[in-house]
Length: 425
Image (cartoon, rainbow, N blue to C red):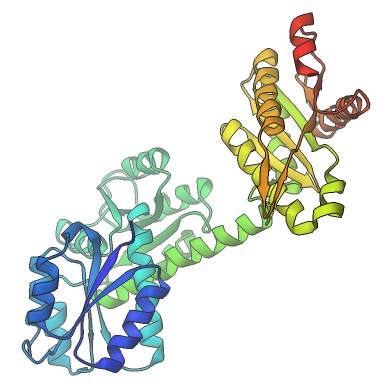
């Protein structure tokens, strides 16, 4: 369900800008030009449907932030946007438990608001560990992080920090202090860096302001960033967001480098990089299959490349349904490769046969056309320590499947005669 954002703003120009930003973020704006109107709209809505509220500090019927208090009382994460930039107003706003305070200063502040809206939804799936802080500092940091929808964890020693990271893949940041009882903070940072690169885990060290050498020590030990106490509410959250966004950008670039743009499956290069060690070191049953769509060139020649792309996209979706536990790659053109870990030979054959049958019996609706697609498969269950050799063997079996009439599986296992006949139907 599309999340809503309550907007309380009396300026038409500002309202129009904010509504467009909300819609750009894939959210639904619920606009109100006064506190009275906002109360009416919210009373006729489902509270859980709202992601947050964006509120002007000064309104005709709420001149001194009363609209902020209303939203906070309704347990709505609240972003304050205001043209008043004096120190008193800022202090008054930040004394409340708001998400953030954004002055109507220039275009960049609205760009920041746009990114903040996206972050509030994404942050629900991101974990942040607050480690080794004194109780007052930890409580303050956790409060700020929760306002931004982060999943938070608090620990007091290094061993628990490392355990949390092993158990929770959603953690992308650790905020360290100096109050560990089992290890100093620089040693913890260095140890974390052995297992987690800066592109995978951000570490921010919060330093006391009484030692100017602390920041350099933390950075040299592997921290991404540092903050000096006492820190500013806004600077803390900006540094958190920037470091999380950097990790997300690296993840996005890595995904682009490792996946096929059309199908979303892994590409050939990543398939070799990921599986080389697994294939050579695993003592467990495993299987590898090369899959090629039959007469695919005719689809492109007859119906055009858009139709061909549609067939590849739908085939990849079917592969994902049948082999959610496997590593699947598009090797190029109409050829795919599947690695099935911990899969005995006969089970591997059965699963591939189920896929082959469903693909052949399910017409693909591509535009105005209904196409029937079949596939030929080469299956190897006795894998070589060299992944390239295994794929070459699977290619030879695939060629046999093509030469025997297509729409069948040829494998290196001996099957009962009845099953062998079924596989070639």
